[in-house]
Length: 144
Image (cartoon, rainbow, N blue to C red; front, top):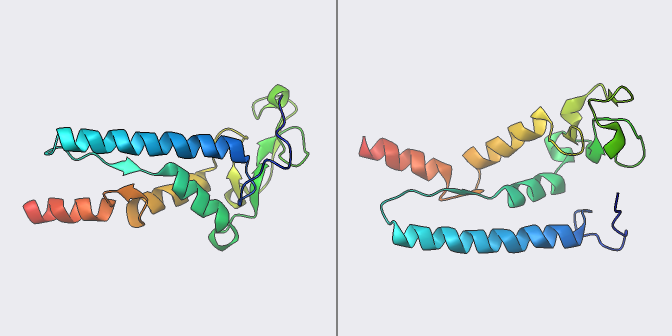
């Protein structure tokens, strides 16, 4: 397994080079989505900005009830992330912590149910979809 150096961290403690790739990808994706909106002006194309939502949650983790931002709830290695490719959550050596709702990561790959709940709430109620989901509901109600 490749470990990124500690010097390669961004302002939320994640691997900066990986997050930069996500940022670049999302910028290109949004440009392409705008091109599709221009081409198909009657279509409603919604972009849910998962990257920004995730980032916002990590920055505000304690306020949202998350006490473990990076450690997997279910794993077998202990260590700073409780993650090991050879001892994944399904293995005999794996165990899970008692309060998964305090964790963002379930097994180092998937999120916990609590995290998915917060992400979905941000998509439905905050400004992480473009156009905002609430405005789509209002326009649907107004056209009915």
